[in-house]
Length: 451
Ligand code: SAH
Image 1 (tube, helix red, strand yellow):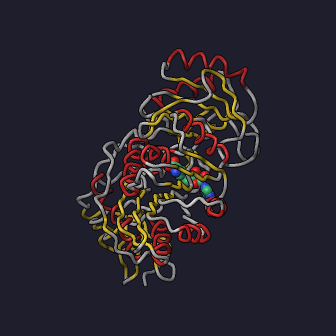
Image 2: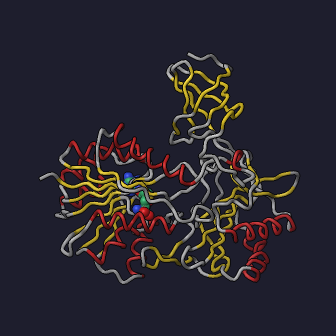
Image 3: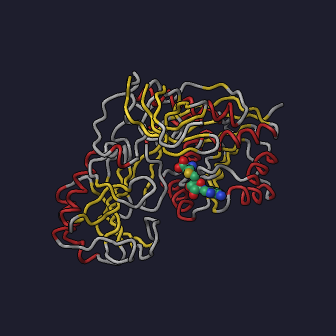
């Protein structure tokens, strides 16, 4: 067992879902951030636990062939990108392996693993950014919080965001500083300006700027609206969101449109969607479309099928399948998202989709009692996966096919295994990279009822 502060030489042989390299010291696994598979390096242990340890990189003796120069100046401080120091190809190899390992090791399953869907664009791909504000030497700055902290790392030109966001941020910051609008102080719940939040439709190019404030300062922002809209023709909406609470939740419940329309529009899988500041919308539109196309391929609906879309958010997955099926029934727990889903159905003249607000398992159980018996169930749960109750209800419904989409391969594998034990075969799994350069990866799973 290694000791604390021991320095040793080792080769990095693996990368974890947290982006840590793995090597061995005296037979024990040591996790080392910022390393790459194939690095031969001097490592110093900083924390030794019962069965594993953490180390830091002291010196690279021989760099891994996966390593690349990285041009982001804040990469090490901001923590948003875990894989910026290795090539994108190496990143996809790692993510594909993470998905595979989850299903094989956690799930004990052996589905067909389809080719990983890597992204064509690895920079500027996000359609949304939320920047907290802070005071630095008496001036307002914005950026991102360092990992597991509320210490601001100033950034205006994050490489994952559309380039125009940095120009908008600079204009907003200049205004805040010129007018001396006080920046919000989290510890005392004083000051005004909390976050600058920007969204941009990937297909439409329409931009929404949302200023999150502690209290209504609409009068002080009218000149900013004029300045922004004169300079940036793609801005279609400027909204003020009021969040009066002492909380680290970014958005409050109240939105006031200061200029233009209440929403921006975009298209997703050919359907028009209206996006408000509060609505959930996948941050990487182009890759989300490929993920949903994969879900449709796995679902392979027949014209007479009823499809349940559980955890449906604003309904984008179900709506993308509506023209291929008889009926879509969506269930989602956030009321505003359900409203968005209904609006999106109406906006696209989709008559065969219904959306309900409730817990996926509980509400769906009631629908079943009312005679709703879908042929296909699509599930897209949050990171923690499905509740045991939801898995039971799905299995009791006995649909012909289950398609699972997940942003967490570990819980996806766990839930797939539970469904496998209840009579489903886990046929195919496909990893999809919605979040290049970061540690996150999505997967789609195709399951069918055993004969
Ligand atoms: N399918 C959507 C949203 C996926 S994100 C899309 O692709 O855009 C997961 C969704 O599950 C979120 O909208 C979240 O609000 C919802 N959710 C979380 N817990 C839930 C529960 N217990 N029952 C129903 N929906 C839930």
